[in-house]
Length: 461
Image (cartoon, rainbow, N blue to C red; front, side):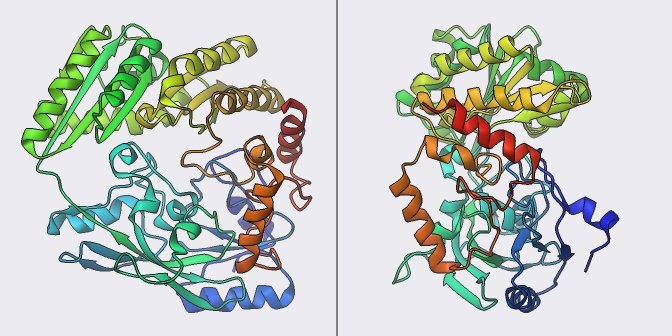
């Protein structure tokens, strides 16, 4: 157990802005030990916050109200790979990428691939319903979790689902996935594995501006072509990636589409030809195919390490996660860039354009620029997405970051129904309190929380 203030500093934040120290941190090594910790906390009337690798961006692991953090980092075993059943049984502390690495010998892989997959753990991925570039074809993690073992808020261990699909009874697994630790602590998960595709083709298409690339992406989907992944990088991101990793991306491009198709060789050939034709018709001035696996790896490295590369421009950033209809992408991107210009911030756009999951990154220097102003600009970006028929989050979760904005999307009846469903698992509200739902005072002593609450209430009309 950790309880000294210096030790707790490591656990008072995630990859977002909110900070608050827990009352203590425990790091159990088994599901039974987690259950014992939860029972002890329940008897003492202390709230519990589950924590994985701490890479989340929505404040989902911030401990409000004197809560106890229970970290799952010691539960990091891959317990079984079933090559015939195409499943894996894993503990929550296993990093995402390790599952695919372990399954490779059987010709299988794990599809969800968030940009943080080298370090983010499967328990946190389940908590936020993480996706990644290949969610366009394969879906988010909810489509790949068959069963969950979980410590309930009373400390008892329960199993939902299992190693096979379509078990009888209520299917609680999709409800638990994305619940951000408000229902219990995941201690094991049965996940679906997929066969490694026969053929993979990866290419980039270069455009003079973001709008042209966005229109090309929308047209590709409109023609019934669903790539495995389709990502966009704008000029700001391209230049940062080149400077950081010597990726040799063409800096004259206003935007770059990174497109990947997978499947049978005949299928990928036809899809690639059609996509190239659409891109060229929409004004692409260069389309290049990765000729070798090493070149493909470099392209994906450029995409997945784009986020840290942006620190070369400004030391701090605010990364959002809104989703908008694909048909609205060009106009939404124009409005997002206009907001950044009006506030005087550098903005980078690097996102899952195939499913409309935007990740605008406001770049700033926190030493000289007030965080209140950055949050105001970010709230305006969220408002643009909602007004376009979008939603608050595609894969990062709501947590503390966007809980007060939930009433922008859901009415009182909707939120009440969600609260009743949560209360069926946690009637006392002691599991990760203060997250997802708007209102409440348990996290009110966090300055950034007060700022966001004021923005949400003041901007909604």
